[in-house]
Image (cartoon, rainbow, N blue to C red):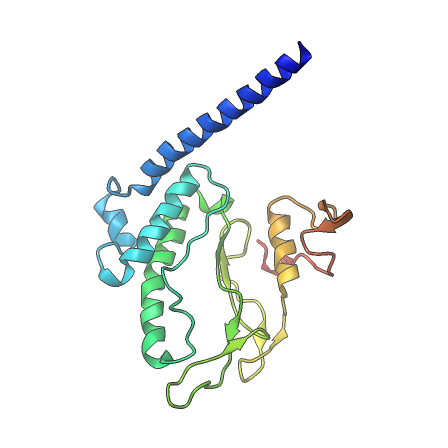
Amino acid sequence: KQAVNSGESELEARIASFELAARMQTTAAKIMDVSGESEATKKLYGLDMDETREFGTRCLIARRLIEQGVRFVQVFTRNQYWDHHGNIKNSLPISCKKIDRPIAALVKDLQSRGLLESTVVHWGGEMGRLPVVQNEKNPGRDHNTYGFSMWVAGGGFKSGHIHGATDEWGHRAIEGTVNHFDYHATLLHLFGLDHEKLTFKRAGQEKTLTDGQKARVVKEILA
């Protein structure tokens, strides 16, 4: 009888899993459909312009996902048009134009709906760019991991605050340096988690989400 009950329990769990998957699929389809949004909202995100429609739609869907309680939302650009190893003079202004309006709209929209306080908005990549030209014939900029910027909004961060500085060449951070371990520790703090106490087992060892590295919560950027 115990074996039968065990089998029934497994079957019930599998059925529940399938039902959850089905509900997620139907809900996701509704969230992805932005046709019901007001014209003012569509215009806010730049859906009325060719340059901003693609990324604007993604940002609008992000807001709709957040409204439904999705805890982590990542918005990508369609192509790697920020990878400016060449033709930076022409391509960088285009890249900025694609992004600026939609991402500002997302922050503004979240704030107007009372969602920004409970949402961390992060904009950035994995590296910066050198302050020197990479290719004389087709000027661009190579990768730089020593000094670069990101911006954040909401979720407990200070607003209107600029933290840190690079050297006079814009090459290396020399003031208020924040490495990625510090940034991760700060995010975990905002999520109510202590990066030193929260551990998980990996290969038989206790690990932390900051990989056991020295990390600090950057309180200077917190509200």
